[in-house]
Each structure stands twice: as C-alpha cells, then as structure tokens.
Amino acid sequence: MIPYHSGYLDSMANEDTKLLVELSLTSLFATKIYLNHFHQIREHFKASSTWCHLTARVVADVFSDYSLTVVDGCVYDIECEIQKEATPCLTHTWHSWCKTRNGSILDAAPVGALSFMPVLYAKEKGVRIPRCTYVNNRYHETGAGKEELQKALLSEKYQKAYAPYVNLLRQARTEAKQWEWKEKTLVHAP
Image 1 (tube, rainbow, N blue to C red):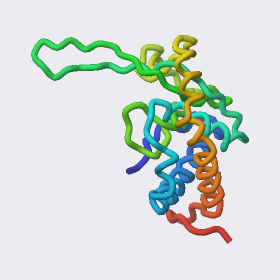
Image 2 (cartoon, rainbow, N blue to C red; image 1 turned 120 degrees about the horizontal axis):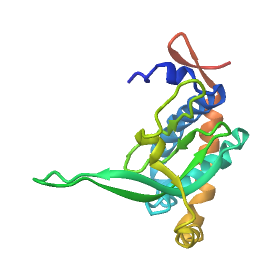
Image 3 (cartoon, rainbow, N blue to C red; image 1 turned 90 degrees about the horizontal axis):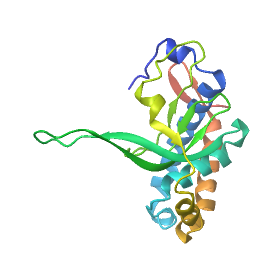
C-alpha cells in the first residue's frame, strides 16, 4: 500500500509527519511484541468499551515529547441500511483521540477499524479544505458523557491494562528507534 501523496500531504506540519512515521513504525513493533507474547499479554488487554480511551491516553503518555492532548468526545458516522427505501442517518460513538500541537487529529484506535495503525487527519497549513468535508465535521469534543467516561477510566479493566500497555508501547518505541529507512528498506541502525 502506498500512502496518498498530494499538496495536502506536503502541507502537513513536519512534526506531525514525523509523529505519524514514528508511531506507525512503533505500531509495527508493538504488534510483533504482542503477537510473540500473546498468551502472556492478552489477559491485560481484554476488549472493552474503554479501548479507545485507553489507547489515546497511552499514546499521549508514551509520545509525551510531541505534547499530544487527549480529547474526549464523539465521532460521527453515517449509517446506511442496505434495504429498499432506507434513509441514511447520522450516528455517533463516544470516542477519545489525540490532538497535536498543530491541531491535527491523531486517532490511535479508529472507530470500527480492526487495525494496529493510527490515523492522522492533518490540519493543513497551505491547502484549503471546504468546511463541509466529512473529516472536518466528524470529530467533536464534548462534555456530554463525562460521568460514563470517568466510570470507565476508573474501572478495573482500565486500571489493569494501563501500565502493561504503556510498557509494551515504550518497548516497541525503543525497538523502532533502532531501525531506519535506507534505500527503500528498513534496516537496523548501528
């Protein structure tokens, strides 16, 4: 898969580009560590409604040198039923993501995606994107649901998973820093 390249990508803040590259490479190593130690790790990471809240906070903690801010809110999607005369409707999911210093949205656990890779919605500097675009209107910070979120963050599942997840991502980031791209190949740096 080749990343989309355009004026939009060229206009991203260099820091956001660097963050996406580093986090993507770290995600590869985190996946490798997770899969190699699946049986020892899986008990810590039981799937729950707190997964995106946990992931956003862990990424902000491990990548604190990028000054990421955790944002809690809603992600809006269009729901369509594949039936005759079905009318699409707007639905939302409670979600957490990170915001970069430059205003870009870093979604480390995208809603509905079974992926270990983050998604970055870059806030463009030089490219004008119409206000009505789907991405611009999809993520909304909101104070609603704060009680439910606080309850989830205090839950035993969240508390049990936080430290092992931070350790896993820190180990993966350390391993990722030992590698670099050279001549279209990922090689171990001396």
